[in-house]
Every structure is written in C-alpha cells, then in structure tokens.
Amino acid sequence: MAVEKSHAVYYQNQNEVIENFLERYETALPINNMIDTIYNQELLSKRFPIRKIMFLEFSQYLENYLWKYFNEKATDAHVLSICLLVNEKCRERVPPWEINL
Image 1 (cartoon, rainbow, N blue to C red):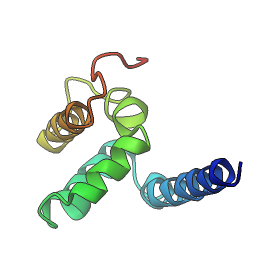
Image 2: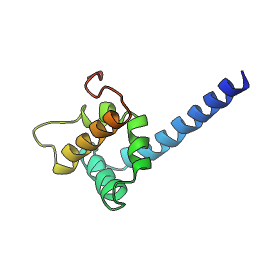
Image 3: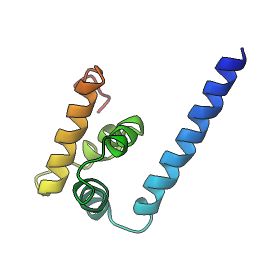
Image 4: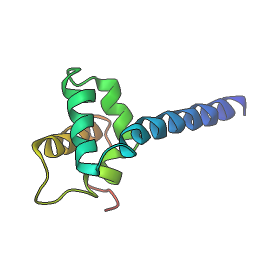
C-alpha cells in the first residue's frame, strides 16, 4: 500500500512538473512558435537529451500538440519533433500509431 501511495505521489509530482514545463511555452507563444522553440532550445541545442524526450513523451506532447496542430504549414522542427516522439514511443515499446487523434 505504501509503495502504491509513493508511486501516486511521484506521478502527481511528475504531472505538475510537466504542466509547468509546457505552460512556460504555451502561455507565451503561438502554438507553432512553441513547438519550434521547444525543438530548438530544449532538444537541438542540448543534443537531444533522452530525459527531455522521455519527459515530452510522458506528457503526451505528440498527441496533445504535435498531431493536433500538424498541417501543411508545419515547420521542419515540427516534423522532426514528430519523428523524435514516434521514435521514443517505439523505444519504450509503446505502439506509436494507436493514439487518439
């Protein structure tokens, strides 16, 4: 029981961290700029840190932002972000195409 409770607290804290991370970009930038900024400042400039990519996958960044706002005007950073997140899902053995669109 104590283990389950500690896991619940851990995931609650993780969700708060994720919300704060995305909120920092979400409130300040239009969505396309947010996606480009996250790609350039958080991923590309830091040589694609696996923890950040895992963090974005855990926050359902692919489903909630990348797919949702993908269109014919998508930037290279947007497309490459999709590739990174699909790759991360495969690495974690999560079916990448069974997402709710």
